[in-house]
Image 1 (cartoon, rainbow, N blue to C red):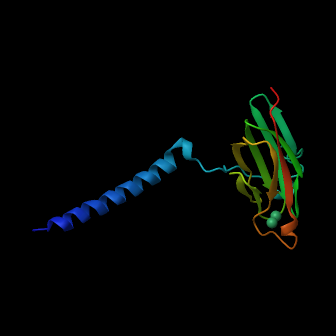
Image 2: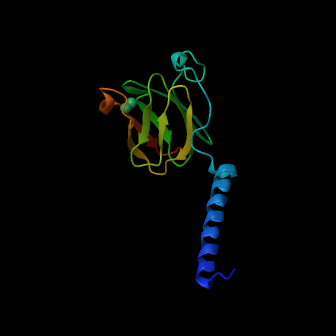
Image 3: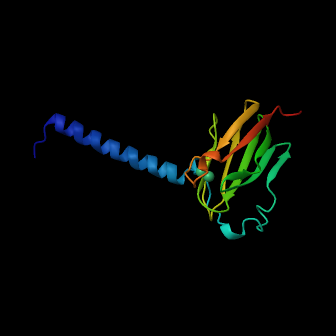
Length: 158
Ligand code: CUA
């Protein structure tokens, strides 16, 4: 069969795009550097306060970074004020004690959902010391708009 040259070019171009898409999916799915910010760790939302992982909320600072344990609930975050060092990786471990909430630190790339039944975890570094507003960005009830907290990024002590 005699296929015109332009038809051939377009066939190869379409084939190339398909191969590029499949490669992207495989690299994103298998590549270890591209895991989603959450991980599949489950928790019973009814026993969050008794669960050893979340019974005590707060920040643990170490020389290499900090870990934040926080819980979202209608209509607050615990703790309501989070102090972390600047320039060091901060790992947030959070969950919800009731319904789905959002956790957005305004002006940063920290943004996740707090889904009952799951532990949301991500690590990020805040370069700029200062005060940041944390808001719930998933509608969770009548006082959703009041659900906020503060992040204080402090100049790291040497
Ligand atoms: Cu919590 Cu909206």
